[in-house]
Amino acid sequence: MAGAEPQRFAGDERSGPAAGHKGREDRARAGAGSHILIVEDDVFIAAQIEAILLSAGLSIIGIASSRRDVLTILARARPNFALMDITLGDDDGIAIACEIKDLYGLRSIFVTALDDALTRKRALKADPLGWVAKPFSDTDLIAALVDFLPGESGGRH
Image (cartoon, rainbow, N blue to C red):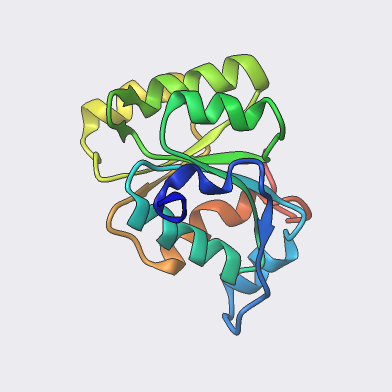
C-alpha cells in the first residue's frame, strides 16, 4: 500500500492552500517560498506535520523515514531546513542531522518526544535551529519554524 508509506512524497514537492489561520500561521504563509523536509518514521505523525505545514501554505520537498530516504531526497532537492525526529527505527536522527549539516549545510529543527537534558546536549553537535517537543500543537510547530522561513524579517537560516 504505497499511500501509507512515509516515503510516498519523496521528490514530489507539495504545497497547500493557505488556511484561515491567524498570527504565526499568517507569518508562515509569508514564507511560502520555503521548502521543508520532514524526517519522521511514524506515518501518522508525518501526516499530521504535513497537514499543518500545507495548511500554512508551506512546501514539503519530501517525507523520509530513514537515513537512506533522507539522502535520496537530498540528491534531488534542497530544502531550507529539515523537521527531524530523533528516534527513527534503526537510525538516529541526531546522527542524520549532523551528516546533512556537514554534507549540505542543512540544519534541522528536532521534533521529538525525547526532551531530556542528555538528549538535548547530544543534539547540540547538529547545531539545531530549534526543538519541538511531542506531542505538539499546530501553533507549537509553526512557532518553531517561522523565524527560519525565507522572507521573514527575523529569518536566521
